[in-house]
Image (cartoon, rainbow, N blue to C red; front, side):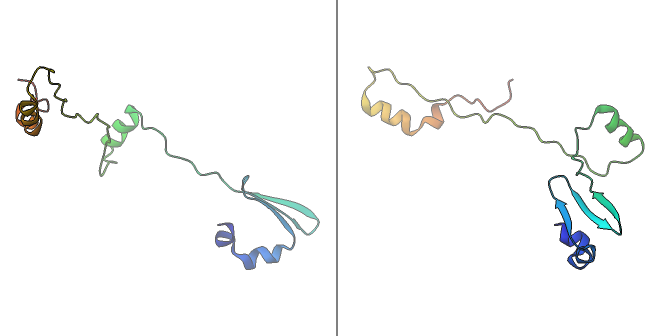
Length: 109
């Protein structure tokens, strides 16, 4: 917070003051002049462009590099049984569906 950075004892030496935390400003009188201290808004990191990465690479400015990607989770297909199949057979097929399911997670041959 602001009192950690500036210190409450120092703020007390200013006398009456106006702090606007949303604008990061502090206004007070110093002698007969009105003084405004304005803080800097934090700069959020932006997206690195290709030429930024290349520059860092050529100047050995990259110690580590990570990437995150999202992938769809593939689920096993459901087994749909025809209504004419005997219930005991559908129960058996459903119980061992992992044996009868197509291997969808392997790379294509």
